[in-house]
Image (tube, rainbow, N blue to C red; front, side, top):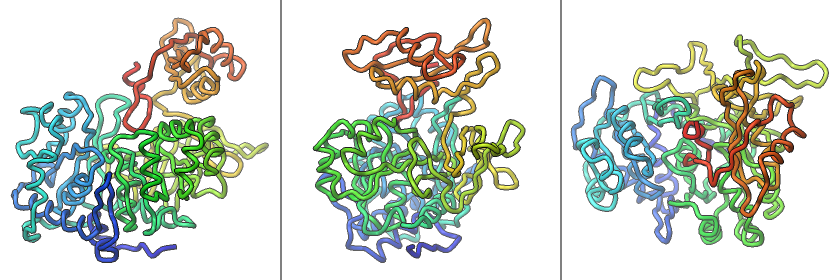
Length: 507
């Protein structure tokens, strides 16, 4: 295992300084044909920090000033993100493809004093944008210019200072800002580095195609590259063929991906196998990977896909098959080193093991670890309790070996005549039908059972499968109360940036 120890009181941007000191001439980031070394990135981070420090931004009632970053996966994102942290300010990464309403909510809720964004984002916000604005490709050049005296930047503070406000997807209500201190960002890498063999090393080249404004892309992707002094290959917009070309051309050794990426790749046959010949690690997160796509991918590449479970509030990794002795289909693995995990019932008690087969009933996942957030912005509400445990709202069960399997979100449970129906189970059965691309199961009111299951289904192009046929398929694989009583066919389902079905939109 590598020596990855870092002093406790540290700013996350220090990992860039460390990488520059150890591997200054080595590539840090590649984007198309451009390459940035660690020494060059460190100088850019210094320039951003100094430029922000020279603004003289005052703290407000909520603490240090916040800086919204609404940029795609470009090198400037890394320079600005780490520069904000080095300046002792708080980064607020935002999806640059958000609607005006979504952008305005994040800007207003965070109380940001500065925004660094693309032109379309600034135009969409108009007068709603913070007073200090930097546009990618124009005035951003001034922010990155230098050298400026680093002493202009404010004190960076320590590991418990707030580093990032990451807004959750908001499955219920408006998105909330998860308050992640420097300590949480660093801890997740220290925890993962304790896995044998280490998932990421300084010699790795990681594909960074997951959006950097998301916790997974930001810390498991860009953060991992910086923490280990590795190299990241930035992909602004995922395209299956283009990404395979990038994997092959840049000698990618590890991929941090989401299900839609692996599903698309799994359909590319020999082209996929050739591009992946030099890759040693495939990781998938954010939502479950369809088992059929996983099998196709493994057959084409010879690579099993490591899956895991995480949350924005956990910076983000909680479990992984990397921490388990073997990969089991559908499993999210086991807790990574340094993360405590319990499955609890409605009364908060640990679910009990079945005496016959060693399994446990599903329970809510409750976690504890140094990687947890402080709570939600601005008052740190609903964070970990005094004992350090935090209830995730997700439901899982453990098999006889202790490997975990996600069931669903507590808030998305469907109650049919008092019985729990987990949408993910229904969706998995529907997705196993050869005429179904994907499906979403929702609870809708019913006069006799309280709720019933309705499925929204995307058919395989050219398929004429009927609602009756899909309901009959479910009846062969599910208890009757779990089966959809209505099926609606749709051309597509709305997805978040990381591939999750946006059920709030469907409702």
